[in-house]
Length: 269
Image (cartoon, rainbow, N blue to C red; front, side, top):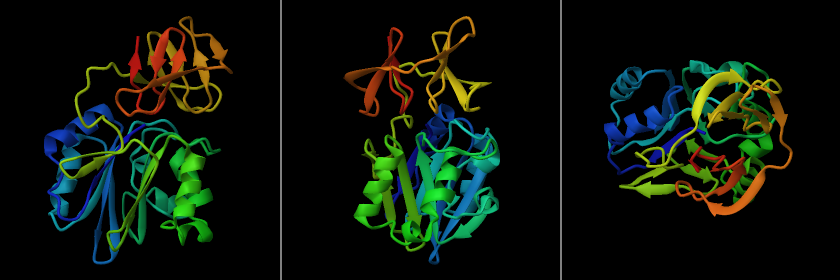
């Protein structure tokens, strides 16, 4: 879930209308990080477009800056300012929840990571604390072997890592670049395909936010379904297809009579 947009040095800041579409399609809070003076500056917890615009204006972003933007769809840990992205790579939950901070390495995530986490933290937070912040991994995030291991662990997820010297490391497939800005999925633009509606009901098994399509609710974290009558259905054999998502090109799955993409939420009847 969510969307990441990467603006490298030498490229104009992302168009405000495009960023508005990103927020509209991923409405549970936003943030950004940029490299300046050898450090990564993080600003997040902006829960309205107005707050996001103001923070971006206050940052005075120019073509000289390398910036990673993020807009969130909440899937774990609640839709709070603290759970928005980006994050410093740290073992400290307090640090991860800071809305304005400076660090040497920052990260933003698009997708869902299957990892045990507390109710007040997201899957991304848990992954950072348990995996990325370990000394061996943190010190070698630019090594191809490490990024491949991360990609294999996080499966369909996409990660964008920013260093203080403006180096960028990405993992995952499905990135697309338009006018110099690289996006983690297609929710930066209007799409003719319907999207699942995010609802506030929580999965009875893992407390992840359920998503709805045609009256059927699914938990992308643990695979639990809730049917039309509100009955819990544990589906162990989701139908897999050879159909590629027209939006992000990942493999789609079959849920009842619908063909759905678990990565970017596109579905086709």
